[in-house]
Length: 100
Image (tube, rainbow, N blue to C red; front, side):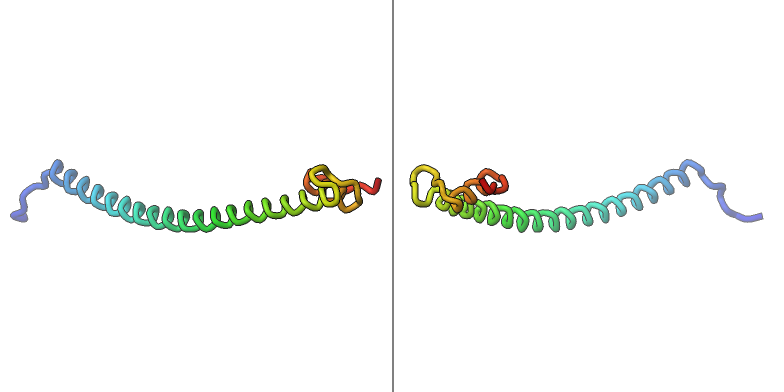
């Protein structure tokens, strides 16, 4: 026979519970660190994408202004009636120019 004391099952359960909790906490901490890195990565790229969006909007505004000037060329402030005026006006309206 051995001189060991019998195991206290409640104490064993408590130790296992603490170990599992510690392991879960470590996993949660690791997950939180990964999530923070992902958010930082997404934020950085979102800022870059937003910058490109703003640049694109500015370029679209410049192009619309140029098309408007072409559509009115020769008859400002009204739209002109030449083929070039009609092509520019159709582009402004998002339509295909017609051969009328």
